[in-house]
Length: 483
Image (cartoon, rainbow, N blue to C red; front, side, top):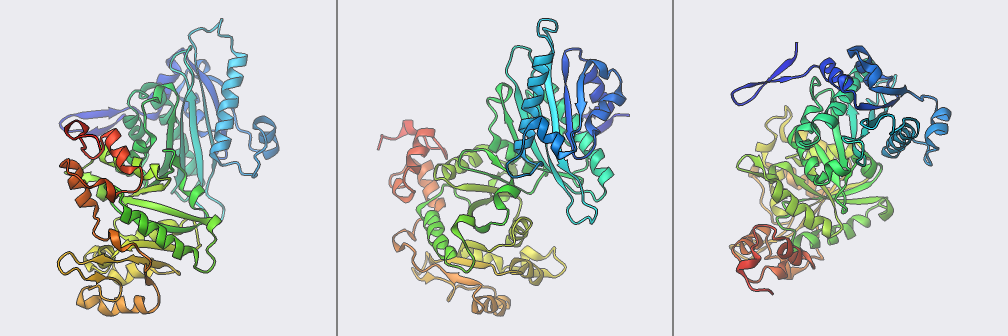
């Protein structure tokens, strides 16, 4: 029986995996290759079992042996096989073969595809749960160029056979979505989890490309991964492409700056520049192996309970224009951010923050869900040699400069704060720019939205020009004179 999911008032039927595979098989024009490496031929197995597969499957293969795999797809320079580069080589190779071997004159209506995955499942010691790359290269018209969907998964199940079964279901969902949901990529993304519990697998990176997805912004799709609970964090670079977290964070020293960046101001950049200088002076911190992350929590992207995607895009666009790497996360608490980084690196970490952020860290209300309360959270936050680089602020009422020496935490937290301060876990950024301490993002935003003067000088070079040109943050260039 098909599963049912509740909608607003109606019920929507989810086709079974067998029904999805059968619909593909019964479409006489869909024809392609399955190449699966590392977890058996679990996806194509569903198509064989559904029936009618002879009209769909051109070839199925699994080149497990590395020498055979290299002979088919080429040698990987780094000797790694579970990579995006390997997946792309597989897809390109298989579509080229099908184009060469199947006559377009004889089969003018055939829409070719290549489905591939390269994965490593859980090891025998059950220390590493495994991960993999999954993708499809496909046509929806015989005369069009190929479109692609590539995604990275992290297994959560603790038995290899269960991981294989889940991978097979995911593969069917992907192929079905490519052909029948490509015009609604956000829905396609959700349907990848049909008949899969979210605690079984995590999708932490996805990229759409090709003519069918010419209008798709992969940063927005990253946001959908978070919104749908498919992952806890996504990272993308200045070019706007999603980056696999494991690849960019692996064995790196990480300095993270959390903020709303709405918009990014001179203060944000001064915080970054000065704290990064201090971070590089720390023991065992090599610049070539260090990474700065500008992080925005998902809670800061919400407006009236919903994700404001345009607002997200505005912030991301400006940070990317400054050459920064951006991370969007579901982590409200800082300790969860540090735990996430620790999944990929054991090197040094630093957090750059303002006074108000540090005061919030010492607020017990954020840790009531933990059995050990704030002490458990701080044990996770400072379990290693992590430092907080604190940027000062001017008290808006008194004009007093507030830093780590005179900031006020709750009376019950004074001794805990003193402990971390005395042990060098909190250090002041002293070479800050005193001329910009009165700049606040919320004040800049108010000026932009109100078409007031003077906000341009509060932003890094080039940012004001982008805001005006692209009319970001409700800026209306028709209502003001050109500056």
